[in-house]
Length: 196
Ligand SMILES: [Zn+2]
Image (tube, rainbow, N blue to C red; front, side, top):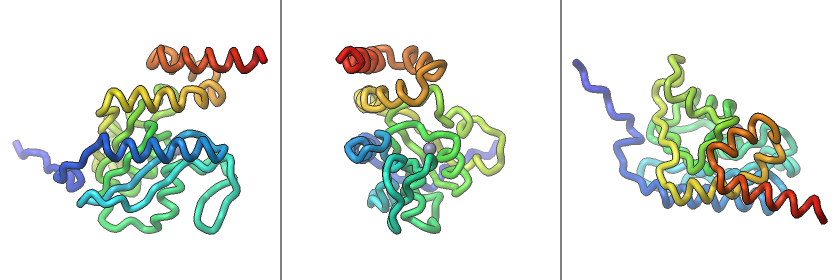
């Protein structure tokens, strides 16, 4: 039986925690700017950061950055900055939150070699599709979900207030189940906010 070829991005050992921290820093920047707390970093095969992106849904569009649109997600910001990807199979995309269907789909379509995220999104995440999809365009992207438990919790606490706001019903129920502690803190904060 032929052994499966290792994807080029996976041949280089990268410090996942290091780059996930960078993605989380971009997520905090997004929150501070009035957008959603989601960040992304694209890393080349030698460990060079090629681009940094963050959610800009709540901000104006500029010549440099996609914005003022519901699709101004962190990964889209990064893809627009990068233009045409060179040797995408050697690239690793780090995100603070499991990419949505749009961004996960774009990553797979562009044949990004590897996608790594800090925190799962049990409501809107596309990882489960990229991982086992039969879709021929999604076969070359390796997926690494939540490799660092401490950063996974950090990302969950950071995004939980946004999750509560964005999908307060079934989506939030899935978040409550997946991240009970971090979501309890977000509910507590929302309650004390509404009591003011
Ligand atoms: Zn997205």
